[in-house]
Length: 313
Image (cartoon, rainbow, N blue to C red):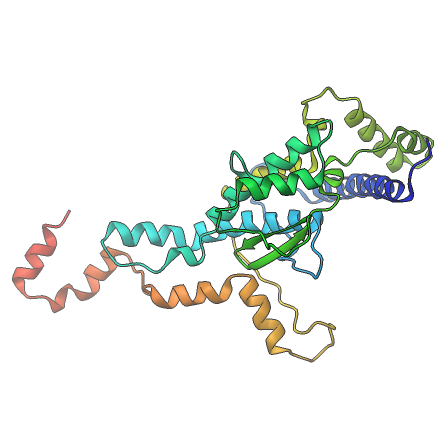
């Protein structure tokens, strides 16, 4: 069946993404098989992820990347600040403004019962669902949400999200098509004729997805799968002792031995590090255990105060 040039390109892009994803999965599986230790050995894992993205035109891919960054930022906040917030509140100590780094409202905008992912997935399942309906429903349901941006003079496909790193305006044209990631039967048939073993494996996977029953894991939309994979990833990370490394570009052209301070500062702000440093300065830098403080400084107290201290639970 002849396709319009734009539809043909979208279909080709979807096929290329499936092949790339399969090849990448094969490569990672092979590396893990060769490097995994014996049972009981410790494991050091590295998670490398794109940073927050904001371009002149932001599409479906930027939405996925920024959503992943929001989920990981929540883990970073929980690891580095939420525990101290609970500790300070329990001791009656006035704490810093936690809302500066808390991105729960943004995640609710994505993951809530009437959130963005649910709405776009519903549009993918509706017979006449499209990207414009998705944007209109978002504007109707989240017009009062402080994290949702609706510029009255923006285009009909335009909406924005106030991310933890700053505001981003998205162009939602073709969001539904990219979230569905539909492959025409002719492309699947073409892939079946490949002689390469990796492409044969990709065809088997694509065919399994295409023939899967409605509502199964294989039939889920791109964002639904992405959200489930992120949840599994966060669950795995929570079982580890996490260390965070921020990679900073010294300059935009990537020229050696040149440092652009404005470029670096912008990246630090987008990563939330500037805010994190400000909050750390407002909190108490010394957090030694009570037993150690007792051992070091009890000698400075008078006898009455020492007795009171001993009677503390």
